[in-house]
Image 1 (cartoon, protein in one colour):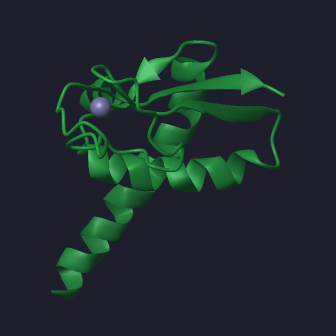
Image 2 (image 1 turned 60 degrees about the horizontal axis):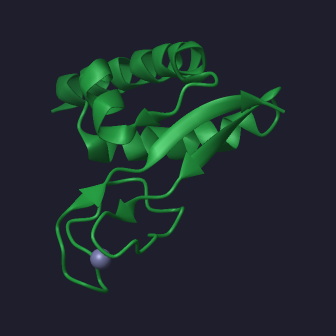
Length: 109
Ligand SMILES: [Zn+2]
């Protein structure tokens, strides 16, 4: 189990540094759907949401910031919370599952 844990930590840290540098290039002035981004980086949307959370915090001291366009219901126009980075399964207002993913982009401050 110790071996397993070490490998996991190593992979995760490498991925995190990779993601931080690449994400800035990838998302600079380019709004991208979270599901597309997860696919590009080959991670689950849930892991991506966690990593973006860390990235938000680490970017606070940098020249960049992340802008999030919240997920929206394409049926009734309901706008989900900006803090919810994973795609909601259905709209709380009209129960539709026709939901547009949140979009993220990075801009210079
Ligand atoms: Zn709706």
